[in-house]
Length: 292
Image (cartoon, rainbow, N blue to C red; front, side):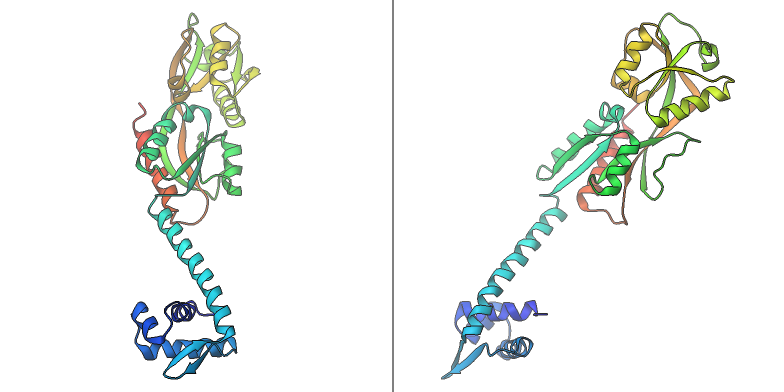
């Protein structure tokens, strides 16, 4: 394995034409330059310099290696500059997956704040429900995922590191002209639900109220859910974020005191996080804190 410092010495000798000039450019003592050249010759098994009078000149092998050394050192310098840019958040990319109602409320605020603070870092957003977002996170296709889970409903996100964001209250949503403030009041109606986690929670919630819901419609589109409710095709339970993102005028909502979901950001891999990931997590926490 060639030593980078010795390659730097050889390149300096080739560039400046003498040991004295190379030592001055690198701020080394002249004996140190000679020592590095001797060690490099031992490492390569090649004669790289030869004495000419009181100076030295590069051999053919020395000129070839010096040329390659310039290429290697340029690539190393570029790599260091790129890493400095990433660490300093002046370049790079960070990717975020989030579920629809988060994308419709606090995520844009977080994204705008991140973009304003770090305009050189590219931020990419992907809409994904928690199971798909977890898969993207584990495969390395995104750096951060905004997820949720319900108490008592397995989430499938074990092994991920969590950053709590907010507690999202759940609401019973019915047509505006229909009374009844608890799920049990609507045991005989048809129900509308969404993703697997939401469906599992709805079934558990209704079971605790003493009935099995007749699930007639399934959609993850909270706008469509409210439209179905508004025309009397069913009732549902929606999180506060969904109602904050878009509220249909033809529905009535009542908060369910004991029901909520935990919303959190998740990352995969050991700490510490890359600088861009850490900065995005901070912006998400700040934006979520502003959700009423």
